[in-house]
Every structure is written in structure tokens, then in C-alpha cells.
Amino acid sequence: MSKIAFVFPGQGSQYVGMGKDLYERFPEAREVYDTADQLLGFAISKVCFEGPEDHLRQTANTQPALFVTSMACLRPLEKEGILPDIVGGHSIGEYAALVAAGAISFEPALTLVRKRGEVMQEAGVAQPGTMVAIIGLDAGQVQIACDRASAKGIVEIANYNCPGQVVISGENEAVREASRLAEEMGARRVIPLNVSGAFHSRLMASAADILKVELARAEFRDARIPIVANVTADYVQKAEEIRDALSRQISGSVRWEESVRKMINYGVDTFVEVGPGKVLSGLIKRINGSVEVHSVSDATSMEQFLKIQQEG
Image (cartoon, rainbow, N blue to C red; front, side, top):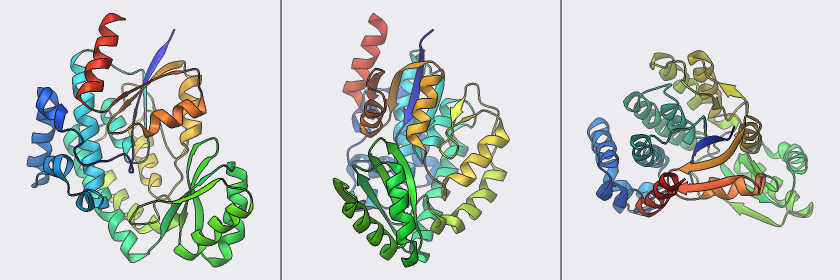
């Protein structure tokens, strides 16, 4: 029997104007933004709808903005009875996935997301670093480049995104050296990412320690459906497994390619990217071209997807 997966995007998918038409068109989306504005004590809705770009791009703003917009995309689907069999999220997207799976409620998840953004931004200032996407090499080759560059400092694989797309993270000089080596090894492109720190590397250890305390306080439940965790690319469903996976996630690798394959092995033949942009949709198509992929990122795509489901 066919299964549907909801997947939720991570940092890099944000854009000024995201969610605005959802807010105007869907009462469920409006309620999400209004609740978030009240809980956070500032208008995250305005950051999403109006920016400015440099304000939205600050990690402490980006993460709650992405989470809230993904929730604004999720709620109209839930209202129409369109529910997933399994979920996953890329980095910060994992928090939206956990809400969709019933493992945590929206409000405490938003509180965690805000804290996560703040501590990651602070860690990026305390231990400066950067991230680079390596295009056209396999993960084994990228690991060799990182190993050789490690004499210059910390550099690690942060994201295993899809075949031929791996992101590295670490100290500036070491990342530059690994990038140079990757180009020598035949990488087609080396793309510096516009981020404020070396996310998903050991340089985020201080942020992980702080967040672990917050995660211990937060009220998690066993999930209704499985989540495929970033750090293990395996199913988690128990509350304690979820806490552990989230605490390791900030300084651990996002094993996205394996996660998608795990969902396909579970029986998923339809993926729905729920949230801004189409980054995950593109990655999924490169991982497996035979699965059905939909993106629900704004009012137009929402209405199109709801129409397809009603006709189906």
C-alpha cells in the first residue's frame, strides 16, 4: 500500500514574502502566525512577509521564521484530513516534522526553535566558521578532502544532501583548504553558503550543550507516526529517542539522502515538501526519480495540491 511522507525544509529555503498569501487566504495559517507573534513577543510574521532580507537571514530569526511558515503550510492540510504516514525535516525542519507527528505541540516547539536559533548564532560568533556545498563529488571523496585539510583546523561533512551534493562545515581556513582540494579532485562547483556559523560541526558543541538542557525541560510525547531523524537516518518515535536525536543534531551531520531512502523503504511513494521553497523537492528527485514529489509552499501550490487530493 502506498504511503505519503511530509518533509519540512531547513535554512536556505527562506525568502522575504514567504507565508504572506497563506496568511491572507487560510484562517488556519493566520492563526499560526498570530499565535507565534504573541508567543515570541515580536512580529515574526512581519519578518517573514516584509523582511528586510538581512534581518530574515540572521539565524535567530531565520529558524523561527521557517518553522512558523512550515506550520502555516501544514495546518490547512491537516484541516482537509491530509495526513502523513511518516515525516522528516532537514535540520530546523525536523522540529516542524515533530509537531506534524504529534511528538510536541506548536508552542513549546516554537520556544525550542527560538532558543536553538539564538544559541547557534551565539556559537557562530564565539567560534567563527563557515559552510560550503561541494557539487560533483561523492561523499567518500569529500571525506578524503576533509581529512587532508584537517591539519588547518576543524572541517567536517555537515549535510549528505543527495548524490553529488555534500556540504562541509568548520573553521574558515580548514574549509577553504578542503574546498581547494575538492576542486583539485574534480568537483564541478564549490559554493560558499550564506550562513552565520559552522552548523552541524563540532564548533556547535556549546550550542548543543545549552539546547540539551532546554530539550530535557520540554514536554515531548511518543509520536503517532515515525520520524526519520537527521543524525541516524533511522526511525524515532519514543519521546526520549527524539530528545536524544535533537540534542545531537546541531553538531552532527544531516544524513538527508539516507533519510529519504529510509522513507522509500518504508513504502513511501509520495513526498510532500511542506514549507517555503522547493529545495527538498529537488534533492528527493535526484535521490529517486520515480517517486511522486509535491511542494506546498504558498497559497497557489496549496490550492493546487488540495485540488489534486480531492480529485484523487
